[in-house]
Amino acid sequence: MKLIKYSLGMLVTMLVFITSCTDFVDPRIPYSTFDTGAYLRTVARTSDTFNFFDLANAKFDITIEGVDAENGATVESVEVRVRRRRLIPGVGLEYIPVGTGTTVNDVLIKTLSASDFSSTTESKFLRAQILVTSAETFSALGITAAQVNGGDVFEFRLKMTDKFGRVFNDVNASADIKGGAFYASPFLYNVSVVCPTDLAGTFDFTSSDMDSPFGSCPGTITGKVTFTAVAGTTSYRVSDATFGFWNCYGDTFGGDVRLNDACGSLSFSGSDKYGDTYTFNFISVSAAELVFTWVNTSNETGRVVLKSNAGKPWPPGLR
Image (cartoon, rainbow, N blue to C red; front, side, top):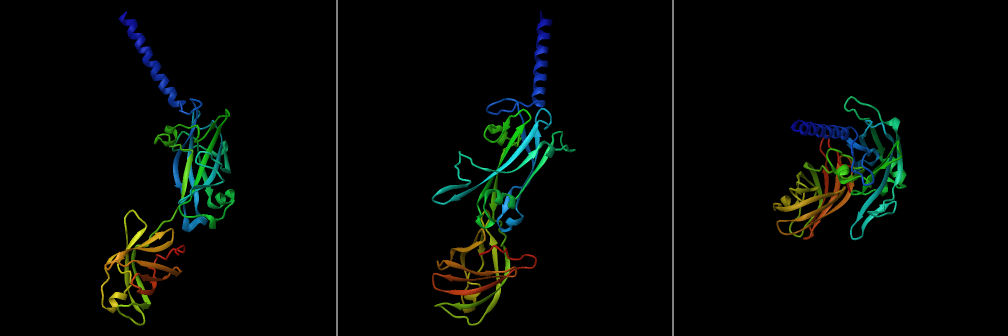
């Protein structure tokens, strides 16, 4: 009797082991409408943001692999679809094409076929590259680069169909599939339009047209100013928001005035040691020079030509 029980126990154990192995080969994917299926694991994200200052060269570029019972061979096609999302303060989200957060209207950009997937030495699963340029994106949506704002998001969705006619997407995939580190298969990629900022440094300036109720400084003056990046922001502490004017007429600058870079739109915030705030008035920008005027709430003002540093030209999108 003990031998029979032992044999039965071994049989159950072997069946569990075999079943678990089978599940590994033919993964039981927790989709909402079927158990066994396939998914597209994200292997690499070469580019998943658009640089606002270089939209012409922006791209969505990822590498995926088909994971299924046949190592990716059941993948018949993958549609790449897109829509644009924009947050309008005080209004809410706006979509192109028109839609809502739950009603998704998107457009087809391109379709991958089974022949686009190939074997690699890195994995047993077939892999494919998805590369969509900004020009392809804008054309599909019927917009131009001039209609793109910093902070916009392009939602790229994948819609996979296997050779059995089943469809896999971000709607019927479970949270584990879309968000799990192992599966890494969101089927939805939010490609944000980002505005990189790198204005930190010490710069040579020339100040002119200076005026103040408290003192004068005729002609032009030269000097250096330092912009220090504020961690976690796109702002910079300004060592002297009067760009030498106070020193010229016998005062010393102090306070916490910051230069803010909002996707190239420059502004001042904070105040000096007397509590005055500052306004930044853009004039022009070239690779070598940033030209602007400043004025504070005590009606002091000046015109500044700020030189860029060697090997680090001013971004053309500043304004």
